[in-house]
Length: 287
Image (cartoon, rainbow, N blue to C red; front, side, top):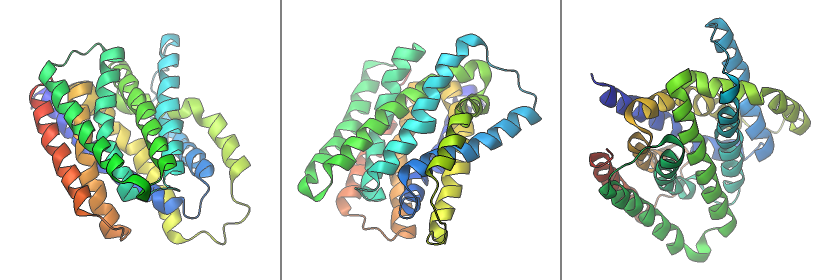
C-alpha cells in the first residue's frame, strides 16, 4: 500500500470518528454548560495524552514547535469545541453538521498558506462548489434557522481549518498522535483550572445521555480521532485528504436521525449528496 492510499484510509477513519462529535455534543449541552463541556473534554483528553507521552517516552517538541502547537490548541482543543457547543444551543446537530461541508475548503486554504501545498485549479473549482452548496443550504433556511448558531458554526470552521492544517504540517516532524497529545498537554493546566471553576454545582440533574456525550467527545473527538486524522493529512496531503470531511455530513446526519431522532429533511440529504460528488472531483485534481 502506497503512502497516499494509506493517508486516505487513515483520513476516512478519522472522519468516521469525528462524525459522532456534533450529535454527542448536542446531547451533552442539554445538561452541561458549553464552557464546562469544552474545558472538561480537553482536560480529560489531556490527562490521557500526558500518560501516552510518558508511557512511550516521546521526545519533547523543540522551541520552534511551540507556536504551532498553540495554534493547534486554540483551533482544535478550545476553539472548535467551544464554538460548536455554543452553536448547538441555537441549532440542531442535523443543521450544524451540514456546515462541516465548509471545513475541507478552509483546511485546503490554510494548507496552502501554512503547508505550502499547491493543488490544481480544478481542485479549487470542486472544493468551492461543495462549499457553495453548503452556503446555499444555510441561506435557504431563512428565519427558520438561527443566525447566531450559523455564525458560530462558521467561526468554528475557520479556526478548525487552521488547526487541522497547522497540525498536519507539524505531524510530519512529530507524528500524528504526538501533535494532538502535546497540544492537549500544553493547554492542560488551564483546562483543569477552568473545569473546576465552571463545573456544575450538582450532578444530580445530569442524565446518562449527557455523560455518554462527554465521554465520546473527550476520548474519540478530542484524542483518538486526531490520531488517525493527522496521520492521514500528513501522508495523503492536507488539501487532498481534507476533502474527505465533505463526507462527514452524510455520516453525521445518519447518526442525528437514528440516535437523536432529529428531523432530517430531503434538502439536507440533497446537500449531502452534492458535496459527496464534489469530494470525488476534488480528489482527482488534488495534486
